[in-house]
Image 1 (spheres, rainbow, N blue to C red):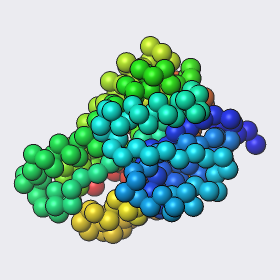
Image 2: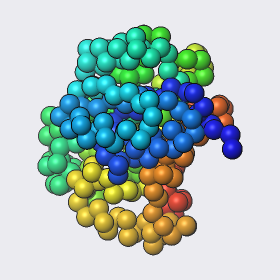
Image 3: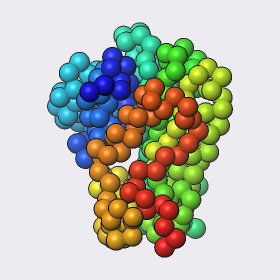
Length: 259
């Protein structure tokens, strides 16, 4: 079987545990021949992250304590390039909103909470793209993939300011695709269906969302991190060389339904 990412160096930003979408992407990319590089925040348990990625032979781990701060990302990316050379793809799996801004009506979102959600969840993608360009860090025909969600275009109870951040993220994908297309670098987003990740626990009544998707999606099931991982691997590979600036849904068709 052909491995779609054989010997490609892929940087994955945002892995946290074995239930995260980033882990599903890492698993698929590795099975398809990729050499993996990870960044994490040192507020996480480094030993646990190291244990988590130990199954990916040769994987490297770097600290990036705030992916929305220019100087921090520049320092991390500079070190990654020095030690690994140019890379072939980036997976941006970073998002956060304050808990209180997810548990009350959106109209009560604080200015600080609004800025925080957009800085961490959307600006961090723009920053990563700019840094790899400035540092000449990407090989030709490289691919950048980020993660979004249906709540970027529809009102979902409890998603609130994260919906605004994901909307900004998707617009950023389009503008970055135009900017980086001149250099044959592609930028796309995967809109995954709801998955029981650590981040999802912050969304009020999340289990009811899972039930609704299973009931109404054309395939009558919820998506897995492995399935989302395979979609990301496709977007990172040359098999998707004509695709850029797109939001690709991996939600068992839920997004097409009217109710």
